[in-house]
Structure formats: structure tokens, C-alpha cells
Length: 454
Ligand code: UD1
Ligand code: MG
Image (cartoon, rainbow, N blue to C red; front, side, top):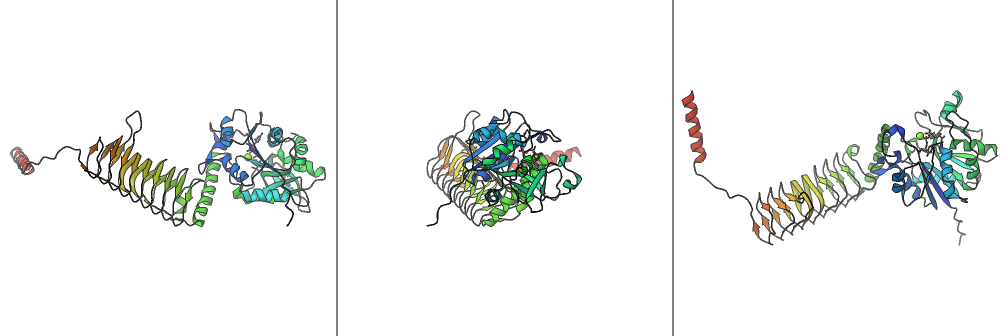
């Protein structure tokens, strides 16, 4: 038997203390959502895929909402924004005595993948035993990113911040993406000795490379695709990251066997689950918590959130499925139908212009156009229960709480306020009166009046 590789512990530190001034928002930057999940949640998801032994999120003072969003992972508070090295120092207390590998990430860089993090940790553990591994990238526009300066052997010599860089250094296209992997045994001393003698008078985490090199330690670079390390500082960048994330989610949906007729107009949440042979028409939006079974067809322009759709159902066009909707197998939900907190059982149909809320619709029931469950009386919500095979005529108001038994028929235009027994017919509307010839007499009278005036 091969000897087991000893477990080398891993810690991850996520920097999220930045105020995000350029977002012009009351919400801390890392709580802005991408594909329905706060940015810092995406970073946590990537990090936890590596099964780390410790995770610490560094937040600013008063960022309780961030602490709540990342729970149960602990937060460390950086009291003053004095730079990225100072931010990592804020996490030192929670990592005391840790000697494994430490990956430092940014909470505003939500597209980073577990594969890239793994590549960084692997590079950190290579024979050259680098003290620091830096994630690099070659963006089309290197702009104001820090530049990675390599030595003749291809090792990393130093990182210069754009503001502190010479013309020659600014011409370098290999940029600092921001993420780093450290040998924990050396990290505390390296970061501890970073000073703030630079253009911004900040403690730059990037200075650790030069400090390590001067002490004779190796440093190296792992390159990532620029699209994976786009950081968000403004709403425009947030929309760019959303676009890249949507592209990723659409591709994953298609790779898993769904047909997206117009991927560019289909919007997913990060937790959307689609079965095989699902077909999604143009303009559909999947909010949080949607699970779609095999063979479901979702026609154009549907909005879905917090809903489970079972196999073979047909949804839309123009349907709105809200939280708590459970759509059974082979159900048809048609145009301008809204369903909320309701179970629609196998084979039932609600094809046109209907609101079903706080209800159960039994198997094979047919809900006519314009049916409304009147679930709210201005104070509380009440339930409607419609039995198997029941037929609800068009333009019916079901005033909850109310039940319609199995196999019952409700006449069109009814306002149903009391229970309808199984197999009964309920008609609750004004009676129709007929006056023979009335319309013809009316027209003749009007025509005579008109002739007199002329
Ligand atoms: C940093 C890098 C730069 C790199 C760029 C990539 C440094 C000094 N520079 O620059 O080389 O090209 O990222 O995007 O590291 N933060 C704190 N506390 C602080 C300061 C920052 O928590 O005191 C957090 C921010 O919330 C953010 C991250 O650290 O998540 C990066 O800070 P930011 O100010 O955006 O650094 P850049 O100037 O972009
Ligand atoms: Mg930045």
C-alpha cells in the first residue's frame, strides 16, 4: 500500500474590508449580488471546494451584514483601511500558530474557480518551496493593475503598484490579479515587515515578494484567464462580472443537456438546476431556488423563483412562478398565469390569465381562464383546495378559505364562497334573463328618432 500523503493544512483569508466607495451604495460592496448570490458568497463557494481547515473573512468596522452573510465562517475586523497587507494582518489573531498554506483572496473578485485556487496551492507546494505564489493575468488593458516583474530564471522578483511603477515597468503586460498563496510558516514575518513608504502610504500586500526575495526565498507566478479575476469596483464592473457569470452558467446548463434557444437572453441564478432535455425559450429569468425536472419546456418570457417543476411540465409563455410553487409532472401553466405557494398536482392545467396562490390543485384539474384564488382579505392569507379532476369555469373567483371537491364543476363567472362538494355543480352568478325582440325594437326606435331630427 502506498504511504498516505500527510495532510497539509490550508487556510483561506478573504479580504472584504473595502468600503466600495465607487459603488455609491448603502450596501457593503461584497454583498452586491452576481447571479443572485452576494459576491463574497461566490468566493466562499470557490474556497470551500478546497475543503480548507480555516476560513477567515476580513471586514471593516460595522459590517455586521457581511459577518451574517458569511456565517458560520468567522470574521476579523480591520479597524482602519490601511492597505491589503494590513488587512491580512487583521486575520493573524485567528490564524495564530498556523503553519500550513494560506491563500489570500479578495471578496470583490467572485469569478475565481476552485481549479485556479488548487493550481496556486500546488505551485506553493512544489520542490522550490516558494514563500509566495502570486496569481497573474494578462488583461487586454493592463490599466492600473500592479505589474509582476520576473527575473531571468522566470521566477517572480517583485510586484510594483501602478502608481509607483517606472515607464519600463508599466510596459509589462503580466499583471497582479491580487490572489496569493503563502507558506504559513513564513507569512507572518513577511507580512509583518511590510512598510507603507509608497505613493498611497498604504501597507501593500504586494511588497511581500520583494521582502521574500531579499531574504533569499523563491516566489512564483500562476497565470489565470483575465475573465476569472475581474474585480468589481463600480456598477459597470458589476454588470461585466454578471455577464461573464451568466455566460458560464448558460454554458454549464447546455453542457448538462438543456436546450437554450437564445442563451444571451436567458438569466440564471447560481443555484438553478435544470434536468435533461429541458428546453428554455428566449427571455426567461430564473431567480433563486429553481429546480426543473427532465423534459420540461419553458416557453419564452417566463419569470421563475423558488419553484420546483417536475418532469414533462409545460410552462409559459409569459408565466410567473413565485416562491413555494410546486408544479407536478405534466402540468400545463400557460400565458399570464401566476402561481405562488401552491402545489399543482400531476396533469393539472391552468392555461390562461389566472392567479393561484396559497392553494392545492388536484391532479388533472382544469382551471379556466381568468380564475382567481382570492387568498388575501387585507389581514391574512387563506387557502384554496381544488380536488382531483375538478373543472373551474372561466372568470371564477374562489374566495378563500374554500374547497372544491374532486370531480366538481364550477360554472363560469362564479364567485365561490362556500365549499363545493365532490361531483357537484356550483353556479354562483346572476341569473340570465332574455327579452325576445328587445334589441330589434330598440334599434327601430332609435332610427325613427334620428329621422325626425333630420
Ligand atoms: C490590488 C493590488 C494590485 C492588483 C489589484 C488587482 C495591492 C497593494 N495591490 O490593488 O497589485 O493589481 O489589487 O485587483 O494589493 N482591502 C481591505 N483592506 C484594505 C485595503 C483593501 O480589506 O485596507 C480589500 C478590498 O476590500 C479589496 C482588496 O482588499 O477586496 C483589494 O483592495 P483594492 O484597494 O481594490 O486594491 P487595488 O488598488 O485594486
Ligand atoms: Mg481593486
